Image (cartoon, rainbow, N blue to C red; front, side, top):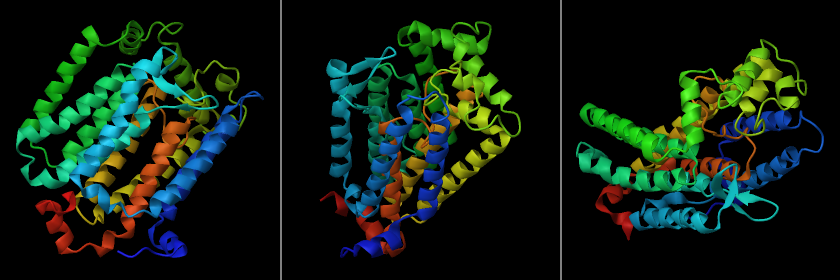
Length: 380
């Protein structure tokens, strides 16, 4: 396919609606970060990350992503992205008890955010060739092995929040691939068994305390402090909120990690129910646009990749909001585009850019493209 001139690429491939929704969420996050005491570095740093992320989005939108259909390419990308996770064991920077970042001076890099995208790529490739054989349980096991490897490396940091996201991405892609009810129940039983094993052999003591506090919320000054302050912040926002910069729970630092893990609660306190409605609407627009790309996928790979990205965003959104509302145990997860952090912002804009790039050739798909996908023509 001949390359398009730059203006034509932007016109034909960029999903301006999805990009606008993402940028609007970024702005709301920035307004929340900037409503605290002067001298906080989060606002200015986040602007820099967003600018880089948008540039990455446009670059990704202009790329022809058909080369990802090759099994060798997908597995190679996955393997390359696994290397930093392994290196974290030796060279990772420990922050709040988790060895999940590389300290690069003025900024830190979190490899777990990018391996999620790599997992989506390799699973989309695996299921695109085998979706008609998904009734064979071995494909659940093989795809689960890819996921288990990532899950284990992330959980060992320990970063249980990201590990849960990894598991939910796999579950979402397995479900859309057409798993049978019998196998679904088997997967759920396996998941429960895994959680039981983690409780006895994997969880740190503070993680157990958070779960027990969620079940019986009595220790609001100890393990349940974060969840309690978060629910107070959300509830005190009422209908119209306290106003930008007037969130007492967050501005007076009762609410921990206001810029990242609990930014939804900080936002809700200042914007109230009206602001929450706006945020939910923006995420709804973003999810619908991603689903639209999935329905127009040129081949099964593009469709499954889009659905994997959708699972990734929905999992982050659901966990973050659930934790901030006190209906899920605290694990420490970001919400897409709003939370502070460079690694997740870059990964999210990259994912959107890849979808825009795939959307450029979605309507140009021909029968021979589908035949090549199943015959292995793209593996060469």
